[in-house]
Image 1 (cartoon, rainbow, N blue to C red):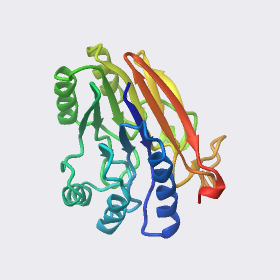
Image 2: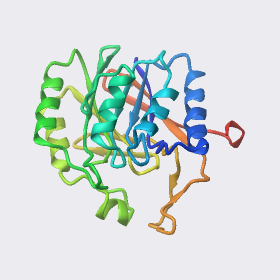
Image 3: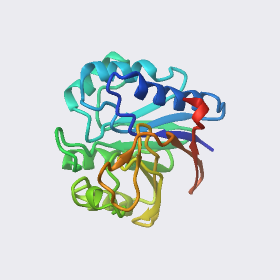
Image 4: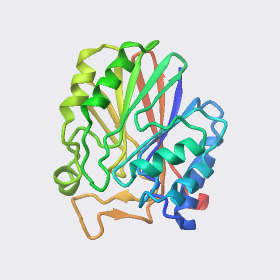
Length: 246
């Protein structure tokens, strides 16, 4: 039963405050000896600066197999360069096999935009990764392909072609779930007949009720999702840090 620690949206900006929040979450993950892999579902950097990526990869543990993917705040060229320097495969569409399970990450970001789009090239690449998987598959992407009930997220920040994700799911019974980020809040629903789970935000938590001033609360405690995969079943527990951890 693979266990995946799923983090999202650290938005590192070279400040100690944001680095401390990510470090505290990673310290909590490190205490869980049964975790098999780490997934970070986007917005690693706040401005896409090379120095922000250096800060991010400098904080990542070396002991866990790790898959990271871009979000709307990330920029392609500096992120690819940072992946290469950090010893990861320099690609924005990634794959990680762990315990007979395959994680397939899809790049949904567009440089300089908040909304998302999955390219035809990414779709075909994912289709091949699904077809050649050794077992079950979970798709991961930054932008959820569902409405979440916040007007800014749904009208301006959404995935423009969610049908690409549903097509990938419906074409193969290998796909058993979808993991996302972007909305800075724990999210659980179904999409195309499989579970869709989004991780809480690390840098902040989205305010409820479509409040826009501000849209997110940076004082809320950071958290992460812990996914346990048992054949076709995904069990997710959301963990939030206590104030003493920061």
